Figure (cartoon, helix red, strand yellow):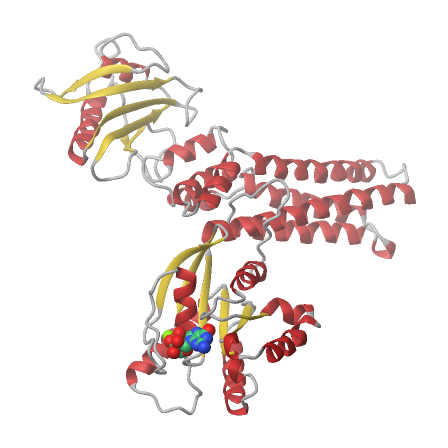
Length: 484
Ligand SMILES: Nc1nc2c(ncn2[C@@H]2O[C@H](COP(=O)(O)OP(=O)(O)O)[C@@H](O)[C@H]2O)c(=O)[nH]1
Ligand SMILES: [Mg+2]
């Protein structure tokens, strides 16, 4: 592990050609080095024009030079930003020049201007911002989310996370839990002051409120994960039911070949798209025949790949042929397919899509609809569509989003989040409800209530990084780009 005190340097802009490229340095004390580089009086937070020359006096680049004195900088340390021309070689030469200058002996002190200067690891600038309390861990993670955002909604939500608005909500909840804990612990320390039923009711009410807040945060973070990671959605079903037609319709483009010949789609086909601003990674697969069907080796490989995709899916769109809904032969195959799908998945939601509704008469369609309308659970997981006349497509889209738990009317706006946050909040919920149970009836035990609250508090603090193990920090920041 590198020393967290070493001064660091990196090219912060993306590799390749660009109008401008940025080299960034951060360190505890860059003042002497910055003066040596600039060779004129240094002013913090001011753009200086500078011609950088190598040892022989040849011009490397003409740059804008900025110096941010600690603590008013991105990392909280002294930061230098050199904005040069955006070419790989010229930026490398600027970095090399920084190394040469760092080794130069300072005349007055007879020490190197900047001992131990080294290249920054990915995310090290942001890691320092976190370690110097410029941002919390949740905000740091939102920075990568903003860089990686693939939809406008994801970008907006990431900047909301980055601004600290979500961290504020987490901190409010932490305060609620802390208050309850202080109240309980005060009575453990002074047992002579018996708690009466009214006191217990108060604790109970506080915990009910905290649990409600936790549930709201839980819903928001789940949404946030969907926003960040997108939904891996696999289209599966028997041959010829219209899987590839559905793929093409959703992609608004002919990505899959559609014919009336069963077995047209051999390999799976993947495409990223958006449904109401949510990123969907849509995958069309080879049609799955009934198990007894003779298959050629290519078809077999296609079907094996289809199963692999089904296993990894966040959501399965199981396509059926609505016009064959009464055909016993087709139904039998469909049933066999569904039980096979069940064997490959655990809790993956399935949306049953009854395609080719255009082939049904009004009366038939009405009858089918009625069957689902009576049962809200069935209604949520079934939809009639036609890729031919585009009936039912909007309903299908809204069912797709609701089945994966998307809740667009989240109070207070959307945030990006990751699975780690969902897990943390889930376990906070467990600690809080344990605490609540322990305030009631014959199981009442104040020490255990306090302990559950303490655990809940510590767990929740992992989100903002107050109680986060070093190796987790390392893992989080390693996902950043170099120079960020
Ligand atoms: N009538 C009707 N035919 C459809 C519809 N969707 C697809 N088809 C036809 O069904 C056949 C199989 O379609 P395809 O998308 O290749 O099915 P896949 O094998 O499941 O990928 C093609 O002849 C399509 O034109 C629909 O909504 N209505
Ligand atoms: Mg196909």
